[in-house]
Image 1 (cartoon, rainbow, N blue to C red):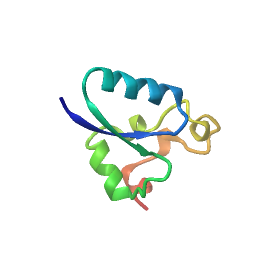
Image 2 (cartoon, one colour):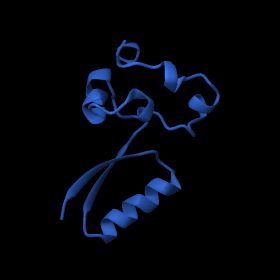
Image 3 (tube, helix red, strand yellow):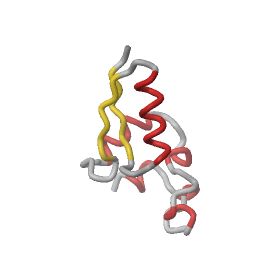
Image 4 (cartoon, rainbow, N blue to C red):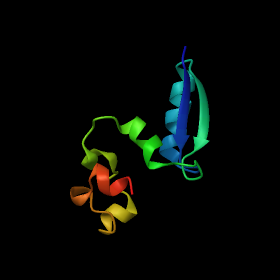
Length: 81
C-alpha cells in the first residue's frame, strides 16, 4: 500500500481515528505535528493548488468563527505576505 505523510493536530480524536483507519487499510502513516511544522506561504500553496482560497480554511476553526480570519476577504496575495 501507500506511505502517507499525515499532518495532525496532536490530541485530536478525529485525526487519531483517521490515522487508525488508514493503518487498518494497510497504509504506512508518517504523522507530523501540524502546529510545529515550519510552514511558509510558498510551501502551503503547493498543497492548495488551484482550489478557491475560501476552501483553505476550516469554518469551525476558532479564529475563523471569531471573525479574526475572514475567509471571504482572504486572497492568495494577502496570505503570501
